[in-house]
Length: 262
Length: 262
Image 1 (cartoon, each protein chain N blue to C red):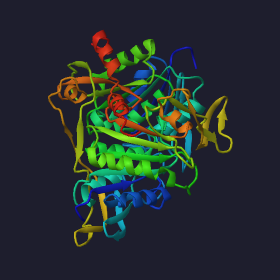
Image 2 (cartoon, chains in turn cyan, orange; image 1 turned 60 degrees about the vertical axis):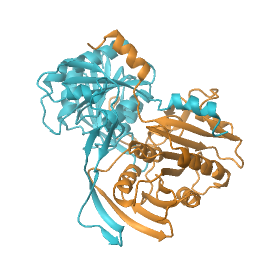
Image 3 (cartoon, rainbow over the protein chains, first blue to last red; image 1 turned 90 degrees about the vertical axis):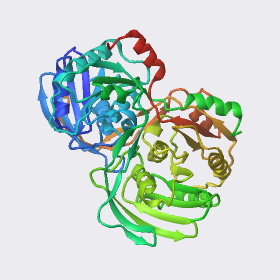
Image 4 (spheres, each protein chain N blue to C red; image 1 turned 180 degrees about the vertical axis):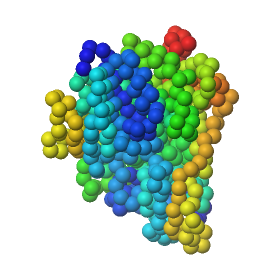
């Protein structure tokens, strides 16, 4: 490896996904690259890890300034393994994606793409998650190239505040209107469990059944201009800084003052 | 079901774990209970869901005011399925645990126990995650009974602020010193990947290898009295309010003002 910046790449769609190939090519223009990604789709794996099965890793490709691995684990496993066993030195940046499907609003909690970036952040490496609002596995990523390169360059140059990562989402458009720095929108997933066949009943109580996961997302504040969903709905890329600490600080102070639990 | 409060229970150690049996008995003293828990251990499953496999559910036990199901999915799947298909009405409270192992500091991001409570919170049902700092599968939960009942009673009576849940952790003690309302401590997991056998090398580059997950947690602020880890280290139960919204609000404002990404 050279003296160029070292960039670690992962995702949750798997090492063969188009999004990670595009991201790898983009990052290779900025530095040396190590890809460590799941050996198949791991959508919705959140920060899940594999303590029961362990993980296997295999080098797929080695070129000038580029190593590409597949790993049997989750995106979080990939980042843990890469940082501990595969990188020649601490990376300057970890990027995750480009995910096929957005990870805005509460969807970020389920996202393996965001999970990989969170893991890097927990290990004090600046991290960015990139996702595209699409259901397609073959996309035109050209409209997002400039924002991806400029955010990655910014973080390589300036770093990020302690315990903060960036969650970047793109709308599927031919041309971005621009970028918006956003908070996450409030939202809810609806109708997520669809019976496969008829569940067995005893009176009105289900005693046995099979279900497939489905559902649709409902934005609870569609008119809130400062949110990630608003930005995506209006043709902008959303850039949302996330923090590791989930403490509800405002209510914490209230709760302490009230002495409710003393 | 009666007119008593309805309480949904899940966990990530599986329906057979001691912790969920104890929690079920405690909650049954407060209301009607539905248990929907994984059919085996799902530790570290975070907010992972099962879109590829789907889920199956089976009623194990039906008594006065008590239904107990096992589900093939993750804790998050369990809560989604329960709320959508198994409960006769929206529960008044969702509790998760009692986890065998603490979920304080950053460990909460990996936790399926916290994941289940987060899912309930996303569905606007008040939720509490309970975890015990232990490695043992057989524990004496008696010292925690009073705090569990009083926190559950409080939330049944008062609810919780919008998009906030409670993360309650216990130290393994014969007698609690009391409770502390806490923020999460900063921390880091170390040495998490241990090679199984010798990895295959090409020069200094690993080309193939198997790893098992291990590691130890290092608290980065052991003297910070207001944190969950401090409370546990000093014999107190920690009660940490968490919020769904992970936006790094302070830096968001700075970033907007700086117009960095415009």
